[in-house]
Amino acid sequence: MPVFTLGIEEEFQTIDPETRELRSHLSQIVEGGRVTLHEQVKAEMHQAVVEVGTNICHNISEARTEVFHLRRQVMELADKQNLKIGAAGTHPFSRWQDQPITPDVRYDKIVEELQEAARSNLVFGMHVHVGIENREIGVYMMNTLRYFLPHLFALSTNSPFWEGRETGYKSFRTKVFERFPRTGIPGYFHSASDYDEFLQLLIKTGCIDNGKKIWWDIRLHPFFDTIEYRICDMMMRADETVAVAAVMQALVAKIYKLKSQNLNFRIYRSALIKENKWRAARYGLDGRMIDFGKQEEVPTRQLILELLDFIDDVVDDLGSRHEVEYVLKMLEMGTGADRQLQVFRETGDLSKVVDYILAETAHGL
Image 1 (cartoon, rainbow, N blue to C red):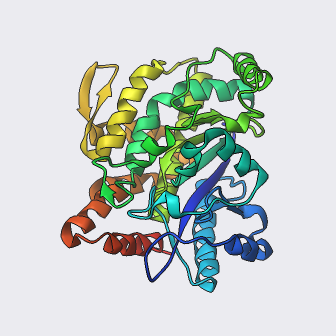
Image 2: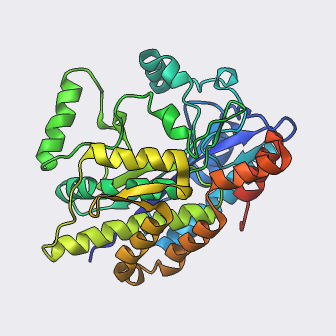
């Protein structure tokens, strides 16, 4: 079996410790991190966002070490600017209208084209790259893995508030991001050449200037031999990030194993998968999703347990059983959204929710 390398990117909020509002780090965290973290720390479109990314990791143990190290480092850098670092899909009450855009030609172009959809896109996600052999395998993976995206997304839901309001969603981040074009569950592609022709058509007709303007929930990366999962909210605990990344890697390994045995996982329509994605956004772990094989609704938690059974025969080869089993703890303690809502129900104070996010972001570090 190939080495399914990993790369994990996390988008953090920079928060004022007094007001608990989002506050611009003016790229000082990024500049301060250049000495020790080099290109692993980056500014994002809004100045209150800082992104960190691991190096290429050969197994989940390496990835875990890097994720924890990067969190500690970015917290130290923030402390020097009198800022705190928070991990959630949205800020509970800060308004996007108050947050400046990072000066950069690339972001200027996006804002010029997408206008308020871009300016209001003050959301925070977690992306995971899994290394693949070639683009042909990558398109096969993209087609097949789409089915599991709502399951992974339900585990990550961590954005129940937007601009001071309880939204009724466990992930409102995804509703904000859907205003962008070329988002959501991708369609089916017959081959790598079919996919490349699609990309070239978009470039030729001026829809995009390169493949990175494809913002689907899963994509074949335009420049690297990786499949990139993009559906998840930013999760509070580093342990949660690592656990979900381990499941993502195991899914790639499992689908590869089945393919090498001439066994195919059934492909479902994007429109059906979108039904499950909507349920995951609305209800998180507490809802029901559709088992399309049985053609019936099933509790989401049950489907996630079935997912863990599905990947069980590859996790020991990957050395990720410990990390994958943390998902059981996530099912027990609830998602970040569940925990944010519980704090709000107990206190009625969104500042206390921010305090909780800050504490959980540092958990276990």
